[in-house]
Image (cartoon, rainbow, N blue to C red):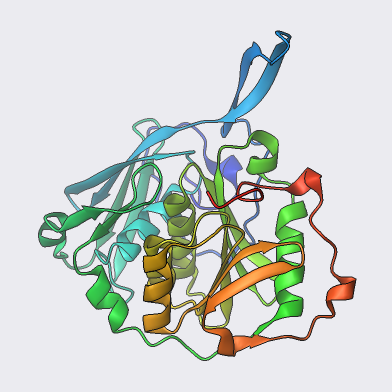
Length: 313
């Protein structure tokens, strides 16, 4: 008996049959830090020589096929394989938003996900143009991505600072795999100040690809959304955000020069070093509406500090 593989994680039972996607309402996806599939308990010693037991995130291989062609093997925590597969193909420009996906099949024992399309794609040509990016673990981009990004016209949108502070406070205080085990990245799709889809993974490229797949799978309108990431604002993150049609990208970490340059070229609002009351905008400032009185904004507590809080990493 199959189930919708991108639903709540309880659907990821071990089974040999392939599971197909079914029509489903748009879910509100939030981290489940207590999912036993996503962490392992590991014993060690601390600085005083005392025994300690901690949770650490898992890494599992997931091999992606597009029709009959093997594309890539990704290291991932293993949740939402359908969203990850669709988002990877979309963000690498191997799948277009107007392509018809007939099936997404996932085998939990084999750790294989197969995306089937109505028509064959030009993935063989794209595989030859693959280049390494600064994404941790296995970030890649294909040679024609920049051409595709240059053709995108981002929608006019606004970002109220009241939304920004509400969003970052909600994300930083929300239970997450990061706060439970660390060593992980998160990406959050928000509307105004409210998180809609919060994904985590060992690489920020996986986390954002899951969001891209979620948007595609459920036909979500991206033009009035904000993308938040715990990782650096690199060229890879800018390209993927623009590919999704999202006009605003926010991070608690810092920038790279090429990321800023690309954001300015395409008119993406790029905001980094967002911690407590502080943030820096280096592109698309015209979208920002300063409606929040800073006297009523709390500084970030030590309990909820995340990677990047003490420097740009």
